[in-house]
Image 1 (cartoon, helix red, strand yellow):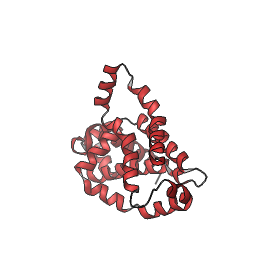
Image 2 (cartoon, rainbow, N blue to C red):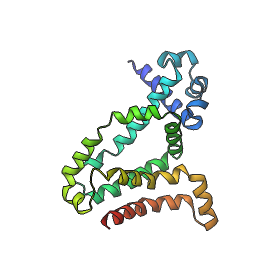
Image 3 (tube, rainbow, N blue to C red):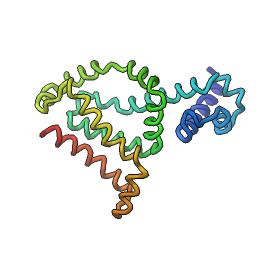
Image 4 (cartoon, one colour):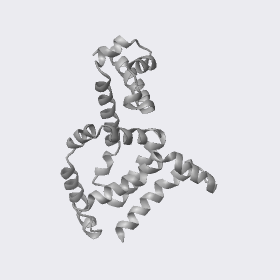
Length: 203
């Protein structure tokens, strides 16, 4: 791939990401993406023949970026509590920078669950558990965290960070009536959510 081709593909990805997040898969048109990228539609089709193929590439790229960002969760030098704090700090910061991402992903999960199912099939959940167990055997036993109840813990952790962004309009409206600022609430949530989970597993 030449430098010019690489730059064109980057422009397409950036434009497609913006348009898909704003309009969703169903609302986006290839012409919208081409216009946003500053290229003609024929060139867009040269790189990606169909909207579905382009959407899959963008969705996988976003998911890959998220997983890559949280790679330090598997750092053996961090304690379990440090990893929980790290996750909330980084995950909420990521969503702060990409506030439309949570509703977009949730909408696409409901719109096309098969795409997400195929993506999840490529993740070795048991291998992740084996890694955590090897690193934190004593802590996991102390807090009674097992392979059987890890789904409950994982979904609880995800919900604590994702829901404020998925339900932002509702939550921001409630906070405003109470005299609170949404951005201040989110900033404090990085620490509050982590401590909430840590205290819960300790009990």
